[in-house]
Amino acid sequence: MGQELNKIGIEVLRIVSIRDREEEIMEAVDNAMKRVNIVLVTGGLGPTKDDITKQTLCKYFHTELIFSEEVFENVKRVLAGKIPMNALNKSQAMVPKDCTVINNPVGSASVSWFEKDNKVLVSMPGVPQEMTAVMTESVLPKLREKFQTDVIMHRTFLVQHYPESILAEKLEPWETALPESIKLAYLPKLGIIRLRLTGRGQNKIEVESALNDEQAKLEAILGDDIFSEEDIPLEVIVGELLKKKNLTVSTAESCTGGSIAARLTSIAGSSEYFNGGIVAYSNEVKMNLLHVSPETLEVYGAVSEQTVIEMVKGAMKALKTDCAVATSGIAGPGGGTPEKPVGTVWIAAGYKNEIRTYRQETNRGRAMNIERAGNNALLILRDLLK
Image (cartoon, rainbow, N blue to C red; front, side, top):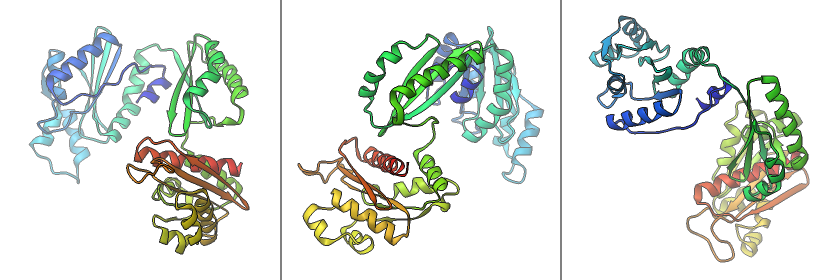
C-alpha cells in the first residue's frame, strides 16, 4: 500500500496495528483523522462476530448500517458455486448509510469511503489479495482524483562490504550536502545495506534530474560496493547472472539447512541454472556425498575453511555444475566453543578453479545467523562470477 501511494505522491506517515476492540478502533481512527488527510483501514469486515469495523465506523461517523441490494448482488456473484448463501454471508450486504460504497471484485466484503471535513477514510478488506484488488481498481484512482499531490520518487541501491555505522561515516559529507528536496534512508538487512534516496517536488522532471545528480555522486563514492541499483532479492541478481553466462550452480549446506537452495529455486525459471543441492548436516553425509576427507574433519572440524572448500568441490563434482556455494557453522543457540562461538559460519563459493571463503562471526540468533550466511554466500558467488 505504501509503495503504491508513494507512486501517486501520497506519503505514509504512520502505520498502526490494533486489536478488534471498539474503543481501540475509535481511538486509532480519531487520532489518525486529526493528523492526516487520508486514513486507510484494513480488516474486520468479515461476517463473524469478531469483525466489528463497520459497526465501529458507523458509531464514529454517526451513521447506521443499511441493506444494499447492489452489494448483495455482488456478494451472490462472488460466492456463486463456491460457498452456500446463509444469514452471515447475507449480512455482508449491510453497509454504512452515509458513505460511498465500492463493490469488491474478488471478495464479499465491500469498501466504505467516508469523507469528513475534506478528509477521507477508506475501510477495506484485510485479505491481502482483496485489498490489492480494491486499492488498484478503485481506491488509488479516487484518491488521485480528489487530492493534488507532490511527485515522490525513490532510488534504491544495494550496498555490500559495510557495517551501517562505517557506511554512514563515509557518506556523511555527501549526505549533509543533499538538497532539501532529497532525503536519504538507511535500510539495513543482514549483510546488506539498502540506501534509499527519496526526491520530492511538484515537477517530475526536476525531481528526476536532482536524483540523477545525487546518484552519480553516490556511485563515485561507493563504486563497485553498490552491487545493485534495484531493490531486488539477491537470489534474483545471482540467477540473472547465471543465466546471462549460461552457467549452472549447486549448493552444499550444513547450518543453513537448504535455505539457500530454497531461495534460488523460489525464482521462476531457476531450473535453467540450478541443478540441485545437498544438505550435509552430519559429518557422514559430508564424507559420503560430498567427499570431504575424514582427515579434514578430524584435524580442522566441520566448521572450518578447509571443510567448506571441500564441500564446494564435492558439490560441483556430484551435481555436475559450473559453480557452487557451501556453508558450515554454528547457528545456535547452543553448540559454540571458545574457539568457535555461536554465530561462527564458514562460507565458500567456487567457480571453475577459483574458490573464495569467508568467516562469518556475528551472532544475532539462529534465524538471523542463517539468513546472513545465505546472503553472504550469494554475495560471494556474485562477486566471483562478476
